Length: 69
Image (cartoon, rainbow, N blue to C red; front, side, top):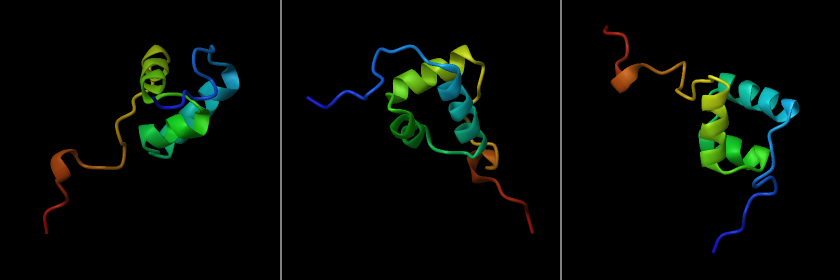
């Protein structure tokens, strides 16, 4: 059985939500965000949904479509 994160089951505070928003703007992967905040990936997805934060990368083209030369 894996070890639970430090903040498992604890409510999110404003500081953590602000950090989540900052990391999402930097296109940080969800797994890394979870590790930095001491949360599970599921908790990060849940809080992002609650706060209406999109976890989709903002600087990547969908389906790897780059500019045509």
